[in-house]
Image 1 (cartoon, rainbow, N blue to C red):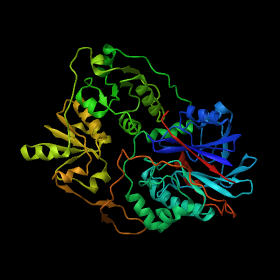
Image 2 (cartoon, one colour):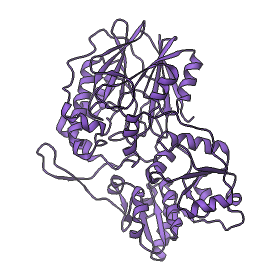
Image 3 (tube, rainbow, N blue to C red):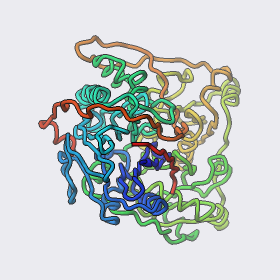
Image 4 (cartoon, one colour):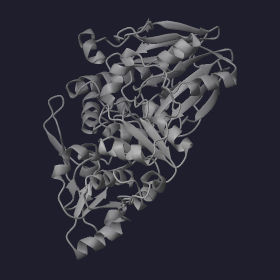
Amino acid sequence: MIEILQIDTPSLGDRSYLATDGTVALVVDPQRDIDRVVGLAAERGVRITHVLETHLHNDYLTGGLALARETGAAYHVSAADQVAFDRVPVSDGDVLEFAPSARVQVLATPGHTFTHLAYVLAGVSGDPVAVFTGGSLLFGATGRTDLLGAAHAAELARAQHASAARLAAALPDQVAVLPTHGFGSFCAATPAASANSSTIGEEKARNPALTLGVDRFVAELLAGLDAYPAYYARMGPGNATGPGAPDLSLPHQAGPAELRRRVAAGEWLVDLRSRRVFAAGHLAGSLGFELGNTLAPQLGWLLPAGTPVTLLGETAGQVATAQRELARIGVDRPAAIATGQPEDWAAGEPLASFPVRDFAALASARRERRVTVLDVRRNLEWAAGHVDGAVHLPLHELAGRLGEVPVGELWVHCQAGYRAAVAASLLQAAHRQVIAIDDDFGHASEAGLPVVMEPVVREPVAGEPVVREPVVQEQVVQASVAQGPVVQGPVVQGPVVPPPVASKPARLAAAQSSGGRRRTSAVPW
């Protein structure tokens, strides 16, 4: 029997995996806070001997190198990736003898990146049991193809379609599909299915990469791509360099005088308390990023690279959780922390605040006076439906475009409230009159606000004409993460690997350019 354990990182929408025969273990795509993985192996009483990367990740800094160094495991990274550290290079068709009763076969699955790999876990007889698909085949979706630049997006989308077809042809229907992305990650090209688990057979029935022809698949994938966090640009190069383990010890406590100096110097003071509590009273100049599953991607997206961060929280535990989340995306050491209440941090100076309302209140206000509605959602959300007359300025562009925001009373909203609260704190810090709407956008039309749609223009694909078409609304930022055990199925006899997908050597240069939960599945050989 082999055990496959999921190590979930809901804040980034990712999963890592530990597979063990009860004596040794392999780990796939570990996050940077490797203490979770080391602790899990110790809990099971197993020794980690292999660490595998499906690709050089763009949404987080890997813990693979640090984990391999700490445990003495072999670190397997694509031979086509140019990296600055020693690794065991692997390529399509390689077989790794993981344990006496288990082995792993390497499959080239370009699409999410040019050098992407999948790993087929098989028994000693060669029968496949599960496939670790990274950012290739997800649950009802695939990984996005524009992270190496828009110029490569269409080519990689075609490669993604071919890779999905390869997996479907190579593996029996019962084989468990174990992706890294697709649980809320921006690395997914479209929102993944809200499934707890999946198999090759299930993906054949529902995944667009396996149900659509290549031209339509490419067209729909490209039309569904929207903005992704700015910090992604730093993750690939960081992973090629080889990140070390983070220092998660708490920084020093800052007093009121130091906090004032940091605000005056233009540093970011990030208040982790709930958004409504923040709105009711906070240190002037601080920014509200409620601690939760959206903290790391949203703060990482907005924070200018290299800007010192001080974390403000009610407790040291709250701050420690945020510090761990941020270390995963390369925000390593807060400059300082402060715990307690804003009255403690302000030392007698007046606190700042702003009102919080809902869409019904906005409808009432618009009937009474002239107000500006500021929509800070992303482009596809806006196109799928927005309040008529609203100003659209996505949150990730707000700090750099404050001069475009109309003067006067601002009512700011997003899809569910989180981004609106962040935007309100940014606007208030810029001395604007702001009201945050903490409400689901679905209530806007119910409140009598006119909601309109507009088409999105997608570029022609494979000789097709330009098409204007409404787009399906993108997944809400605060979407929940799928839960559940890894799917298991009976072993099916048959060959594992068909002829490999053609490589793209001319494009390789482009490819270089404790918060989780876990599940357990016992899979019989």
